[in-house]
View 1 (cartoon, rainbow, N blue to C red):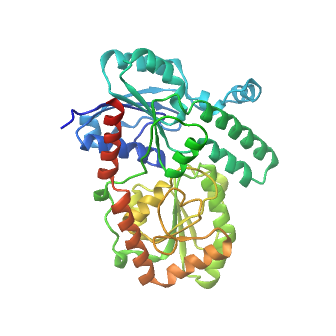
View 2: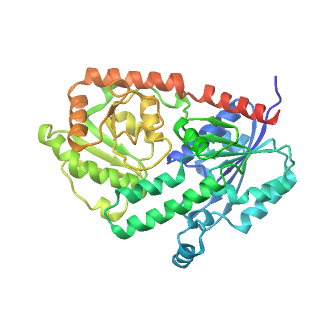
View 3: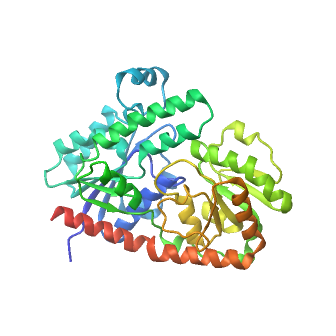
Length: 406
């Protein structure tokens, strides 16, 4: 049996409470590696948006994981943003680089030895020279890519109706793409969240060993829903409401899809849950739509409601809330963009549509046929059990790390 790995997991945000896709994906790796007997140290950047809340840490994290954090003000500032328009670098990348993190890293490396340093996202690559300086040459630095980052901004530029925003998003996309492709070979290996992302980076020149580690879930935390205890005549949306792709998709759904649904099924209600909803969104009024804000337990919320809708037209990587709903056995209607990177089949595990009328018709079909909805939900659960379970996927990651080291 191989000796346990000693891993530093370096994150650009505090991992708990796990309220978004990135933190859930980070926690899956931390939890999975710990359960396999490996030693995990977590260094996280505390930001104004993601503050340190130690009371949100689970018991195993408090007792078994070495945790370090340092505050960095990553808020967007007008003058630095303006300067980067002309200077040539990526402002989004620069916001996460700070000398205090350099000092924290140096102190950690002076006190601990690691086999692997895992960078949770491309935003942490500016710290790579310091990591190389203070770590042994035997240490492998691995980039965990949660998305093809520039695609998020590229798609936002395509979707927005505001010409000024379209130009600025396009500018951010070009800068991010240049950075992403220039530095994609800097780490010793690449861990992508989807095969599509891995293929993209290979096509654009990635020569490093690459593996796909999808978002995976601990099935014990996602009990199969009891349809008889579900408010089936309901639709729900769950996601961070300060994320522009979610805002755009939600407005499209409420304005173009929901009126078609309620014209045929006026009794159906829509529940929208998520943190940091802007006032302009909460002030909007739609028939049978309830804005709930942040819910205390996302799994309980999803289990109680009927059909999940995921109307997303931009973004990259995997939609974690979709994976979670599948694990619960929920029926889902989504856009093809929302389902990217998930090995699901239309009409077997999920219903997919990209135009208002087909999306509405798919939703009506599920709402009117509980037997079909249940069958689709069970197939989705089976897919998660077979391909996205925590144990098998993290074991594959550990094997990849042993291979890198040897």
